[in-house]
Amino acid sequence: MIEIFCIRLKELRQEKGISQLTLAHNIGATQKAVDFWEKGINEPKISYVVKIAQYFDVTLEYLVGLED
Image 1: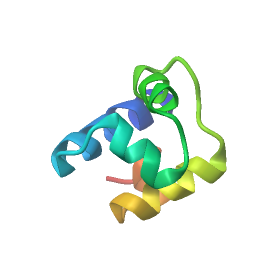
Image 2: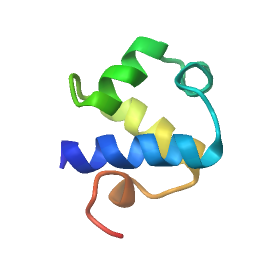
Image 3: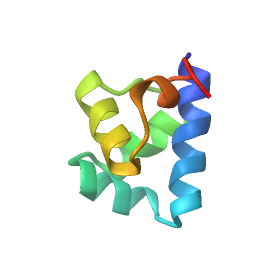
Image 4: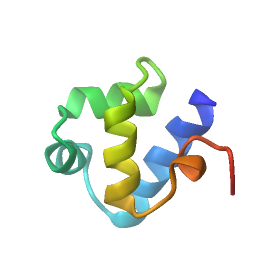
């Protein structure tokens, strides 16, 4: 599931044309945290997953790969 999250996070961010830093500022995280999430080095807390889903207007299920 984390692999799908990493891929979808990066895809959503790139489709919106924003940097890791911009996303980080908008969800209250650091650029390094976003980078680590996209690389699968660290997993975000659920509170960040919720903020990411809200920011990109997608469901949690989509973001973590439970639905297409």
